[in-house]
Image (cartoon, rainbow, N blue to C red; front, side, top):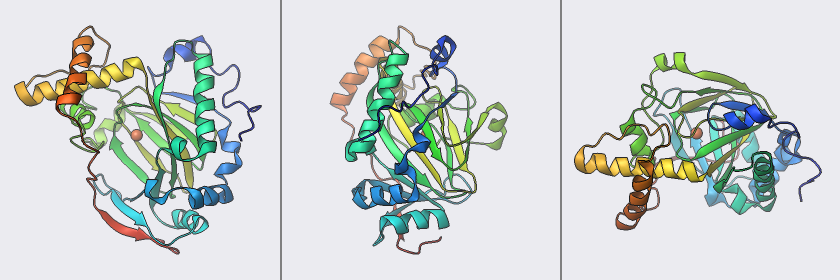
Length: 303
Ligand SMILES: [Fe+2]
């Protein structure tokens, strides 16, 4: 059981300006989760020992986009896995942690409970918590996510670049391909785009939130990193995703240019309704595993 006397956010964390900006601009917020004993080496080892292994995404990467590799866990204990992440270049994603672990579910509910109390009218759903444990120097390349994302940083240091949700940072056809799940989340990147990025050096106890579909990339500092990546939808966020999904279909069939759907418009209503029909007539299958599994993490792994 979590100690619910301890709030995640300070009582005055969401003043009028912060509430207005939340989700509209990239914003950084203090939180108390870094103090939770679950995120010590021992706490993580015990979580990894009880967590269903098939729900742990195992990745490694080189220095350039497209070098993301998919792996599997071999015969390795939780404590050995924590050591392997410290020694190697790994990125573990304990997917759907709020559904697999009661304590993290409680933590997730507490976060959203406090946010809903602080921001009346905030109506999140499809809340999904992924616990990320990653190596010193690990990277996540330029990409965007379909839902809204809050990144609660609890251990180590990382630099996050957040880019505007507009041309030339993201093109409509690339956004549509991600939303329609025709590609993974990576989108075309060139170094010159960094001039338009906001850069955040995240420390334990800080949470970063940015506008839905905003491109971003991450580089870990020289230490073990632990973060909670919490995704969610709101009615408006789902409507935007559905409008983009309809645009993807219209582009495919008629070469229609729907744009980035950066701002809510009346056009979202018929597009969102049509997306519901689309999901019935063209049901999407479980996301194919696009990256083949090419390595195994056993005890003593250092690569
Ligand atoms: Fe992301």
